[in-house]
Image 1 (spheres, helix red, strand yellow):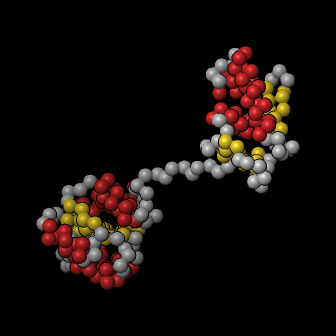
Image 2 (tube, rainbow, N blue to C red):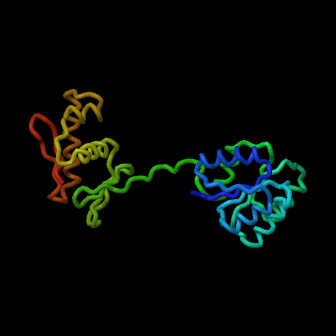
Length: 229
């Protein structure tokens, strides 16, 4: 959980920012001025600093300059009502990484903090599954490829329906896959002509898998097929 140091003298705003960030997965420590901020920075070693510019005792620019003398890596975001270009330039010259003008939305602050921390702004996509083992074969379902693990035979590129049929058989490995089930799932209905087409595809898969005698697609009379592996 990232640790964030919030340095803000406006206590009502600080409370809102702290509560909002904590609900988004941050551990937030608050300091009411730059002097307290420097002390907490030394004590905590935070992952990121969010600091107001205009504060009593010690302002945000002075705090940022001291932080930069101690650490070149920790990201610093300035919060400020100042809008003059000279102030923005000064903030960056003192080592600030970003500059957010008040008033601001919490969503924008969160996006900027996460970007500086190098964390994804949205959930990462699920990992792509690796090849599935069928005896000595490796079956890459998304890529529709079938190959022997030892590379002794050329890789086979399956058609979409071949790959889907093999996946259905593999999902029910050593169990019966009924003709009706697979015809309705892959062909849309279990008509006679689709049944003959299914038989052709089963014959093709048997030919592809023939180099491993431990892998078989057997007929279950009157019911369907079973992949033994």
